[in-house]
Amino acid sequence: MDEVQARTFYETLLSYPDIRIKTSLLLFLLTGFRRGEVAGLKWEDIDFKTHKITIKRNALEIRHQGVILKDPKTKKSARTITMPTLLIQQLKEYKEWQDNLIPELGDYYHNENWLFTRDNGFIIRPSTFLEWLKKVLKKTNLPHFTIHSLRHTNITLQITAGVPLVTVSGRAGHSRTSTTTDIYSHFIQSSDNVAASTLDNLFQTGPKEEVNKELEEFRKIKQEMKQLGFETIKDYMEFLEFKQERSKL
Image (cartoon, rainbow, N blue to C red):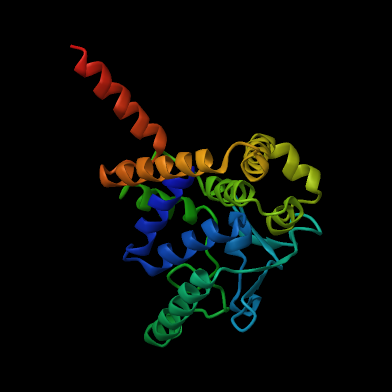
């Protein structure tokens, strides 16, 4: 997902009525975890005081065997990362909901302290997350995405935001930073171009008045763009071109 799609998806999740679906997909989007890592999470893996979450196990769905637990994919996959505050708040709300539900289900519920479970409390099948994602996407005009798409979205948004590559790689659980570089080379190059433009703007030698005039003009364009309801400057410019062509008719 690009930034606009990610924002649309995020806002749809915020108002989604099923708290299990809402919480799990927010967790994918805001951590970049793999689906087996999320399926294998227990409440003991979350430290609400320090805002840390730890990956200790990986849940795999094997045909004719069900869900089995394995160690994380690599040594680097066994990791602890800091969660955004909004995810912490959502997890607290979800835990309260789950704590109230368990006594109501009585002996039917097998409480093994999993974050996400089947209705009877047993560990969730990792494939369930994709079914939940499909339900949410139906509420939007977004194209088809997979659970792994949310992982890619998380990582690329960090890169384009300028988060140091070693930090991105560590949070993703990649065995080497070069793995991140190889997979996301396109986005790293885009960030590199932005960095060059930033330095140009910082040290450009043109007259200060001219620079200020250009900035003021740019701000006016963005303001007009938002007033007309355009999400990106590209869409706004296409509208202006269409308007110009139409005036020639």
